[in-house]
Length: 202
Image (tube, rainbow, N blue to C red; front, side):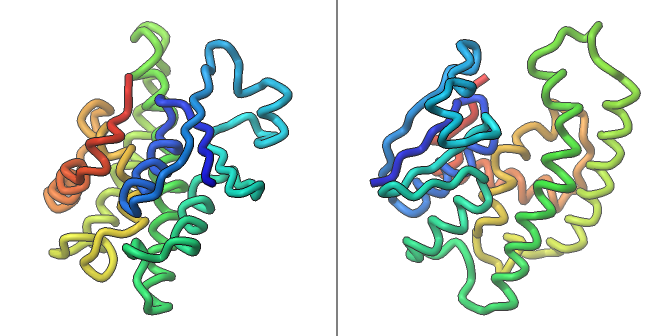
C-alpha cells in the first residue's frame, strides 16, 4: 500500500502525484494543513524529520525527498516507463531532474513565495531580480539542450518533465523570459492530463 503525505500548495508534492497518475498507481493521500502546523506534529516528524512534504510510505518503507520518491516509483512500477532503458539516457534524465531542483526550483523560491503569499510592499525587488536573471540563464541553456525535440530526453515524456511540471506554470507569473522552444515545451507539459488533474491549488 502506498500512502502519500502532501499539501496541495507544494510543487514537490504535485510532481509525485503526477507520477502516480502517469503510472496508474493508487495511493492514500494524506493532506497536511500547514496553517495548523500539522507538518511539525510529532507523529509526522517521525516520517519526515525536516518537516517538509512529500513523504511516501510503502508497506512500512519510508522516503521523503521528491526526486528519490519518483525514482523509487519507477523502480517498483517500471511500466509505463518514465525513464529510458538505456543507461546513458537514464543518466540524462537524472541530470535534468537534479538541474531542475538546483537551477530552477531553488532559484525561483525568492520569486514564488512573495508572488503568491506576500503583498508587493513586502517584496525584496533586488533579490527577486537577481533570481529572475539566474533562472532566465538556466532557461536559455535548457533551450539549447531541448533543441527541436518534443521532450528533453529521447523525445519521450520522462521524470525530467515530471519535475518541471509544477514549476513551468509560473513562467509568466514570475516575469520570466523563456525562449520560444522552452515555452512550447512548457505548454506541452501543462497539457498533459496528469498535470491538469493535479493542477496546483492557490
